[in-house]
Length: 179
Image 1 (cartoon, helix red, strand yellow):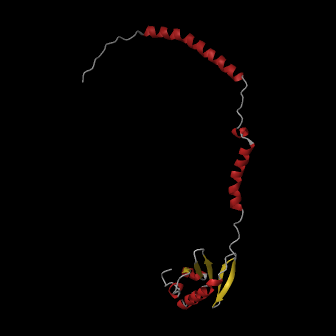
Image 2 (spheres, helix red, strand yellow):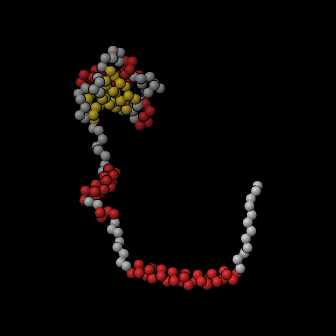
Image 3 (cartoon, one colour):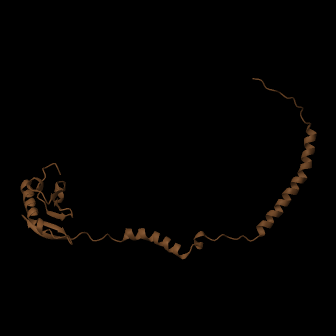
């Protein structure tokens, strides 16, 4: 590695002392001038900036209040009433129900009764359903929800019946383990 080296001579100490003495009065003048400026700026009245929400117009305030209140309303107002059911038939002391306002299931009654009978015969143990909820869809399908007592909730199942189904006995009672 090649580098250049320059030789310098040190400055005498007396010259530095003279430079310091000459610089101190200028520094004192600058510091006294800045103190007078500071005093002047303190005496000026300060204008406080108004809070940002005071500049909002009324519709903005209303929308903000509504946005803050709506989640609280959703939390504290109780949910809508649970669905009410009406009985459409009873099969072997098991009520078959549908929701209030549901379209008439009269054309499905023979299929419903046959399926519920077949389901009960297929499961001749203590886990008979407590109720059956029937709902029909617009695409000509009927759903039977077999609801069991709390200790047998694992047995709850849903069966879908299609309008053009010929052999309902195959689909009315699903095999155990395929629920």
